[in-house]
Length: 202
Image (cartoon, rainbow, N blue to C red; front, side, top):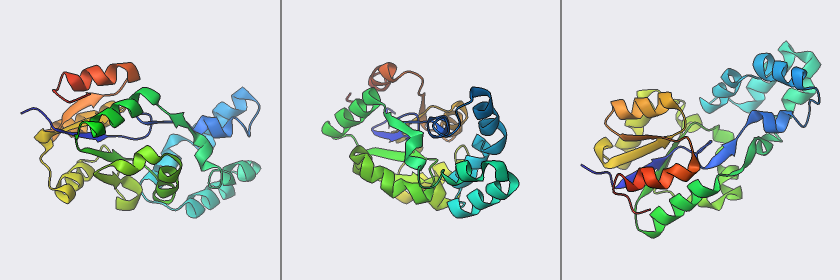
């Protein structure tokens, strides 16, 4: 069965996201920046926000643990939008072509609950999905199979009728294990061809 519905990841599929983009503005020394992103505010720390933790809580905790960097850590809430480098143009064009052709589009995203609505307001193409599951709201993140099952149940869909696009191999593999057609996103220029091979109108 060929899929008729397309499910997007957002970060690094539709929007280029990188914590370094913000913190490089606040820490001039390259080696110190690497240390900061490795030890002070690593991805595992941000992942707590994707899983539903509150910015105030995780920032206060980290600032107490690393008082030298307290001011830099606190910038992560009011300046979080600076972690978004911008839309990935070719991916957005694919999304818009799918919508223009009448193909239903959805999203399953690891995303902090507190930042999702403001991000959609800044990037209106995120407002046109037929349904979205945001990890921070559900308190479950990819690649946990539970978030994919929640998505299917909430929107009354069958996995075999959906193609799921994600830049993470683990997330794509988790979706495939549940019966989704999984596309590993690596190069924006390849996405249209990958979806066309599945019979989608791009």
